[in-house]
Amino acid sequence: MDSSNNNIPSSSPQSIGLLAGAGRFPFVFAQAARRQGISVHAVGVLGMASEELADVCDTYVGVAISKVGKAIRRFKKVGVDRAVMAGKIEKVVLFHPYRWLRMIPDWRAAHMLMTYAARDKKDDTLLLAVIKEFARDNIIFESALNYCPEIVVKHGFLTKKRPSPSQWKDINFGWELAKEMGRLDVGQSIAVRETAVLAVEAIEGTDEAIRRAGELCKKGGFTVVKVAKPQQDMRFDVPTVGIQTIQIMHESGAKVLAIESDKTILLDEQEVVQLANKFGITIVSLNAEEVRLKQCA
Image (cartoon, rainbow, N blue to C red; front, side):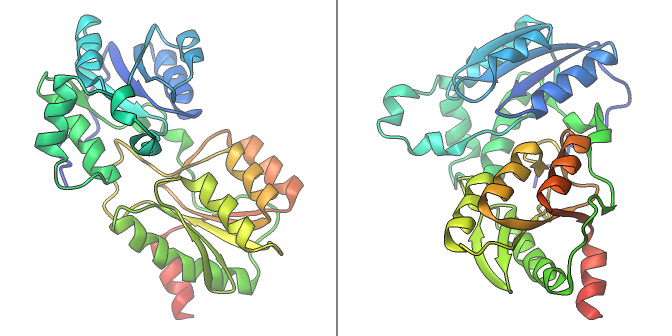
């Protein structure tokens, strides 16, 4: 694992590049950085990032996922030498029919794939490949959380309801399995009911894994466990939950969300907790040591 650029910078830059995917996180980052007086120059992945980012960034341009060279040139044009990733990059586009007709890579993307991602197409492999390709032009990626650390969830019970003994058993059971899936770079979430695995997140993402669990467990009442990878690089693919997560859990019949404290992004926390309380969903934020203690109890 290349983590040489995973450190917190000694001082904030005057401007920063944002390589944006889907979801709310790019907006939260951009607003936080600009409050600190930092100019944000965004490159959004077409078909994933919202064009409304143009309203909260100093500059914005959409670039196809296969045009790495164009993204690099854009950052260089606006004078960016530090950048962050924020938002979900949907890997399912790699398996669309006739994808190569719509996603012909430019030469920088081709170089990146052949040089840094030839062995596999796991999330860590691909995203580290992006970081390495940008580094060839002295554009260094750091964690977006350096600029908005307040969105990382703290330890404790977030909702009025707390897990029952049987739900704690499912949390403990699911935690180790989710960690192993993370270690293998398969996914970071797992759905469990009565110590039976209902769904494991893979390329489809957490939301679809929850929906699949609901389809397989019609009576509902299952637990969703979402954790960081044991080798988590905080520059990208940090586990994230938000209002949509709770809405989909409610629609699918899930009743407990267990997330890893200090390593999970919780977007719009107040609204998330209010919605979870309304639906009777339990949210608990814990760490590996607490899980081990409960397993030994």
